Length: 247
Image (cartoon, rainbow, N blue to C red; front, side, top):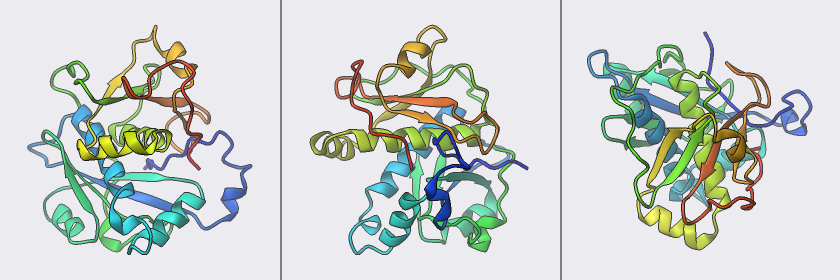
């Protein structure tokens, strides 16, 4: 069984952050047998869930989740996506967290937990089985939305791609100034996840926009560029400042 914990650092064995206690941000996607969400909807909902947690009052200052978030950001940033249905989903919903809904997808994000210290109702959930499809091709990026461009040359399970989309949203959040952050938050974090055209990817990856590089813990090779984050009209020009790699 593979996991979807990811980190865009390129050298997972040669980083001082490895010496610190490791934490993970759990995300749970609801996948009922008779009504699975569309893949793109799940990816976009996961990205918004990460943003919702980062901007929740409990994650800052003296908030109940602030210490866990700070410890998570101080080491390698990992996100793990698991699936739940029925009673599993209801039990997950009883734990402290935030549920975010999309067009049909439901994703619940929880405050970071130690890598080896998951709550039992989350630890028992499956990582595999998150393969999802889009019944129709996603439409154009809506006006006023950020866009997380996926690498067209990488094959990723939906769970892996959800974690990567979450990374891309986090990098974009860090790249924005306070005015842009406020406007995006007040608008409800409009965003789209799309797969870049093969011909466009090299220029996107070299544009200076925030880029996620995976540590290679699961599914893909270390150092792979997985997501480039853009925000038309806000952060979209070549040479735009880069927020820096996720820790």
